[in-house]
Length: 296
Image 1 (spheres, rainbow, N blue to C red):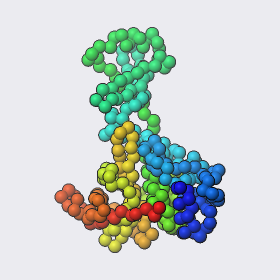
Image 2: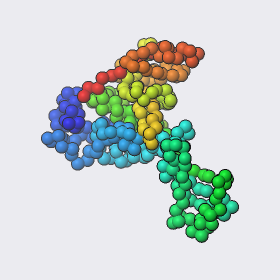
Image 3: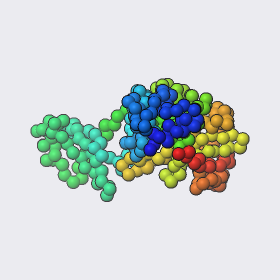
């Protein structure tokens, strides 16, 4: 059982019996007979709306107060991805502008590339709507406006950081929680609207879905951890690499060292970055990704 494995790991690392600590705020809960106590919630990593599964637990405060808005922005960001937006339309709110007026509707797509717009009589002037629909012919030109929610890139990145941190915790256990270098991550998760964590820690459009996992990355004399996430939405997969500290190297030194790197590309179990990048990039640093085996 998941909670039993996490409690055992907590004991192995901290020496505290029958204890589970929220990995974000470190609030401790007593676990009796592997039952989930009041105050702990199941945590999907990544969020359930993006294909995640339950991998650990956080307290209700962290899940609701700190995580809900970041997870929401993570979903919005994936939904608004320019490359896949038209492929993932499902009930997308739209506004149609014509000579007859402006009409509200919802637009959905199909696998064969066809799109359907449905207009609700509840949200439109019924007489004008029927007149408008009666005039539509093949080849008619319509003004179409997508009504999308506002997007906050800061909260989007915090959402990625949260999933990466919890994925690393789910794989590696309390060894990373007790590390002082992860204090800044926890503070960022608890104060999502502030920019606290180091910049340049998210790698976009770099990895393949089969490369998901937690990696130890060695670059020259420096090292860090990279968590590769796969977010799924409407049969589309999006990959992100989030850099996390390694306890052996000051993370600020690592970020200074890799500030000019263009790409990381792990392959299979371990691979030199230069093998994949030498023909594409003029500026590069060689490094090796090695998958970290989960402790559970």
